[in-house]
Length: 330
Image 1 (cartoon, helix red, strand yellow):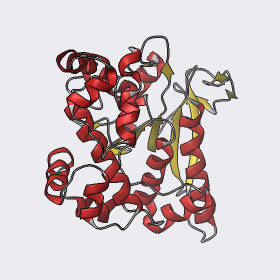
Image 2: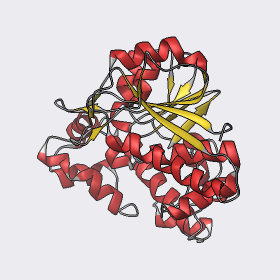
Image 3: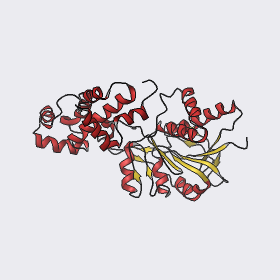
Image 4: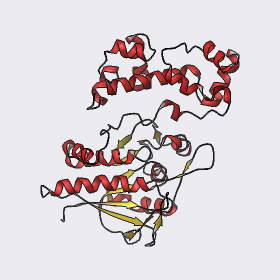
């Protein structure tokens, strides 16, 4: 069909396979469902620097349909997958200069650019994120912000749309991003139908948090505090005072506060509030308990304290958050 929306997906050595196959499967499913009503869907093309097979992150080989040099004309979407290179305490984004150069030269030929996972770093290097808000995999969000201060990096959402540039969180969030593209092109009903066919847990709105508090913080290396983040998350209604936590770690209060901040990357008070907020968000997304019960279950004590935490950290009330993010299962 001549009205098919053309999508080019960039490939490079070591690319995360699911960053490629996840969005491609969403678009293929949308195309099949649209075809039942004789409506045009998507034509996905794999493009790389050379026609040779590309070895992905898990060893599976992908065969490009064409090369960057041969790609011509207007495209509806350029998809930029990512990859993570491990070795240090936290991984870093893999950057392929051929993809950066292609994107910088050809981005104007696409209606939109969509970065999956660490692909946001490539899009930033191509100059497409300057002055925009963006997200990426939680493990490389700090590095993206440090290397590109001109980008407003928000490590929390599943995906972010900033004009004609879309970015998403890690790996499977690329499927959420692709669903959002389908919704933008064809409406919410089709996006939900695609999600049902792919047996995705839920079509997650972009503003939903991409990670748990424990995952977003540094991993403690000291044995005396290593277990505390997980224990705090499981005991939100317990005594989480510095004195109690210091005693649990068998450290003085002053020494504990310093060590916790160094090891976790957050003060005890900030971590505890974030953990309680995460617990409240989960209850609001998955259940129907009244707000006083949610506040008590997460250690906030009162609805007023719950409201203040939501307003300060998320900019919405708990009721507004529930209305936006409550799952169909709730």
